[in-house]
Image: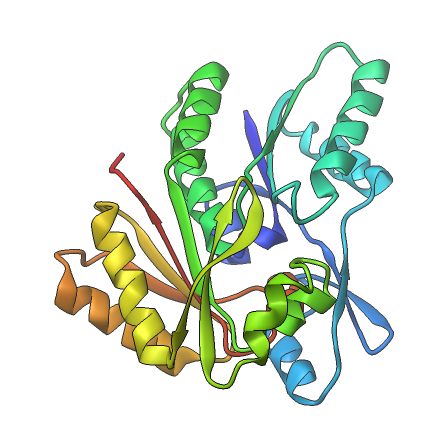
Length: 280
């Protein structure tokens, strides 16, 4: 059984390689030149472009591209599971379903399952980490799929951005919702609900919104993996980690950069917190 993921999971190429995952990169266009996410462009490259006033654009993998990826993965194993970026934020899942149907029309010796993670960034990444463990542990396909569905219902995304208009211009948030970004020193707290980005609260100042993130995590009983991501904002990421260490008994807290595709839609200064509401 081969697990396939895409670059919007924000997992590293090293993790994908060490866990025998097949990694599909999305496309990032910076100033007219198209790069493969992670393979040809880094988070630092995209953050610098944003600082320089360049707005990176992204595009999903089209059905033909995913068809090629699936075909290559099938050379290693006749059973593949593609766990993809939220269908509410990208058309990649739709492309994957088309590619799957194309292959199944041609072949009857393969088993292809497409799963909508309804997640983004390292919320999606935490689902990938667990799914990779299930496959490594030798669970059957049905067992892996059942556990993924369970995990999807317990993953939480909390994040704040410096400029909500950046999300709106990229089509990931409505202009009406983006009004929060125009208020002086207002930091919106957002989450992902049914795969969509949804503003839930707003705070004046970074410290207050970070504190509220930790309060919500405690209220929901986070007990296991915790991951923080940021776009060119390591200072606040470390502040959030220290606050979690101070306010909870959690110790397994990792920090990483948001990936190139996601930064292209959030801009710089974003802080995101991901966790499960219950243990394995």
